[in-house]
Image (cartoon, rainbow, N blue to C red; front, side, top):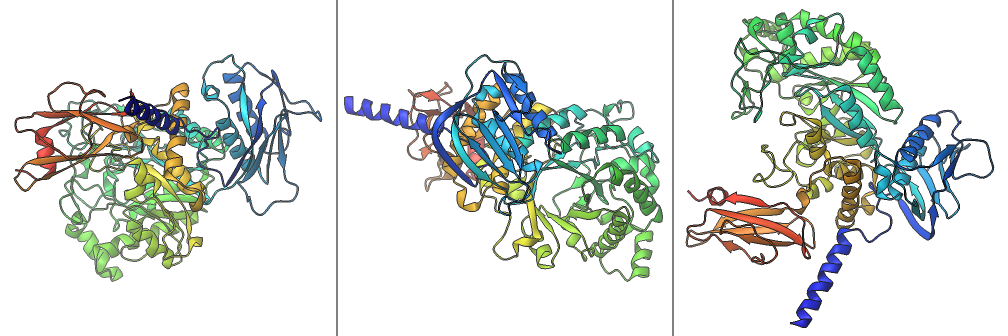
Length: 633
């Protein structure tokens, strides 16, 4: 018995050490080269920052000063002096290995040196430096303590130039300050592209001065709460006051805020589908009679997804046969293009139902005139004309992978979402590609079991996200600009839940896009994720602890009973369970093999432990649900 107790104690210590990341340095994304060196650096009461006055470096120094003075009681000095605490150096001769965004970071017992070719590299060096600080550096108020860092030498640079997060502000409106908050979170992990999904059926979120009804009518809808997509249709007496939009000055402010953090913002105007908000404002943009009665979607069913391709129950498409549509888009892009310095404008193109087009005399006449044989070719006709409008504004055209159907516009870039297939096809045609496949990068999906997560139509676990490899073996990597994760917000009602859905899967995407393939390691990554969890608790940023929860499957035995299989996504966890309706802890049965559900059991309750401490959430699954999973009728 004593031996067993000793073994259990050793196991708990080992597991605890793993969970707390035994390494002193736990950076996400994992740097290209990292060497821990002897000694520690202690932050003095007066911090002398050298090199802050170089062109472009001011914003980096300002960012660092704010972080240091918010959490610590240090005084900052930028006086010219041979002695320094932290020094920024821009290479007089660019170093080819680290490129535009790479850096060298040296922490010695005496001081800290960051060198780079460009200010962006210094900024990313600062992000790594901040992760070397104790977790209290994330505090929004001053913490009185000795600030000690491990000494190290780091050389680091990104694998891809496009490292993005897509934030859907159309389904639910997020304020300007909330978008800034999202930017602040993403730059911690060296993301450099914020894709703003600005228009959809539920709302038009950007001011177009020449088309005022887009925001007067299209930016507001009836407020509904529950599971989006199942709501009753709004009635005429329900107020349409839920929503909002960004003025053009708001956009300029956001762009500047992002630029000061080395983030580009790419706007998306999603057409020709997903356009109900625009059509509600300007019904003449539709092919379908009666569009003057349309309103921005409040979450009611407007599509039949049981068919392939899906059919619209309400025509949410712009009419490719209507010249007013192209005049409309020209006006929109005339105002949008100057607001965003980023070279690309994303024009959507996804999930465009064509059943209303099939019934339209105007579309039939267009097909006859242009020699178009299919509805996919009708959309391709639209996309090619749209590309010319985008390019006339000095911008490059990008769309979702559906724009491949019917023929790709000559210079279009493709964002591949339905799988990697569209990106592969576009790259083979020598078009630029950004990979954001649904099976790795859709962070609106559930992160764990449906019994505990807000219900969505699929699950994407952290470990699967970490497997994302943007460059398939079959194509030249020069056409793959990078990748991104997409946060659609049909079921995301507020900023706290947006955080929950983004982190920690955003950590995985960051590492997928920055770190060399050879440096990626799942077990090592998990330890570093847990270090970030500790920092997020200090920062009061919400995250999903789903990786601690069990994975459940069920099947029928030969004698028609149902057995439940349980596993864990990460190592070192034990699963305890009960069928007697009480709350299990580590004194209850421990899962070691498939469990057959007792004949009259009503529910299964499960929790995970690390050693003697509960770490997962208590999960309750009705037996009726387990029977369904097993296919038992």
